[in-house]
Every structure is written in structure tokens, then in C-alpha cells.
Length: 231
Image (cartoon, rainbow, N blue to C red; front, side, top):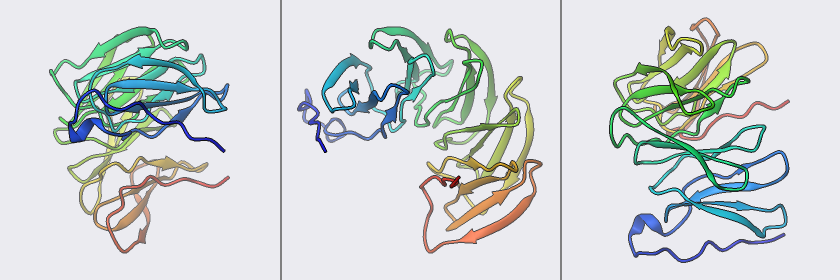
């Protein structure tokens, strides 16, 4: 249908020569992504450029777009940046631990609160103004973007656990020990509250909302991809 070519990077580093972030699509069809040269791009549905915004740093995290059009993106410099629908910066939250790498897309709840993890092993929630609500220390890397359901934030960790935290307080509701670490696989939650997540032990796990195993789906290799539930 169309192709958009990202401009050539400003330097020749191997880490600034492409797009490592998955795109996100707003309700009006605007397509947003972050390139490795430190910019967020917004494209119109026809592929034409709508705006660009400088957001320094490298990021594997996909943007998150709120119902009001605010775009949120995390970077490897420890910042979660909020951009207005026109690309102007709204605010930037800096993690208390300097330089934490944010490789997860942020999840957003109905109140506009955001939830995300870091490679340093901390999990944060900030409100719609960028103010810290709470922190949970996992102690090991988190690159699994959270899923929100039933008052809980669900995500996997490099320590091999699936976590359920209270969205209200950040308190640990439960954790389930998986076969080994979870990298990049974001949980999906079905209509019955069952949580599905991929693991580096070659298995997809289904865990109940109470933290007990429902079943295991075996695969032939590491699972870094995120499950999607049809219907």
C-alpha cells in the first residue's frame, strides 16, 4: 500500500540504523514508532509524515497511545516520555535509579495510570501527570510488557517468575515459578482471567488469576513472542 523511509541516522553506530520499536496505532489511525536515532515518528494513515519528536536513547519498547492521543515511550536512558498528540513533550519521568533501561511498552489503565518494568529489575507505576505512584523491586530484569486485568498487573521476569501486582498499591498478589526466564513475551489474559505467557524453556504457560497452573503448551524453541487471544 505504501512505504515510509526513515531518514538516515546522524551517526554510523550499529544501534542507530533502524527501527527496533513495534508501532502503535491511535484511534484516529495515526501510526507511531521510535527509531534507533532517537526520534518518535507519527505517520498519517496514508503513510505521510504527521510529526517527529526528539526522544533521545534507544528503545525496544513500542509506544503506548492513550485514548486522548497522548503517546508514551520508554528509553534505555531511564525515561518514560509523554508526548501530546501534536508531538510536543508533555512530561518526562526519570526512574529513581539513574539510567535504567525501559524495554517494555507501558500499560495504561482507565484512570490514565501507567505501568512498566526495567532491565534493572524494578517495576513502576506513574500517574497521568508523570508522578510516581509506587515501585516494586523484582530484583532481576523485566522486558515483558505488563497486561492489566482484574485489578492486577501481570508480567514475567528474568528470574523465571510470572508476577501479579496490585495496580492500586504495587503489593505482590502472587508469583508463579515458570521453567526459566521470560524475555520480551508479554502476557495475554482471556475472558476467564487466565494468563498466558511464553518462556525460554520452550513452553507457553496458562496460569489462573489466582496463580495456579492451568496447563502448559510445548513448543520447539525459546518463546520471545507475545500470545494473542482470538475473539
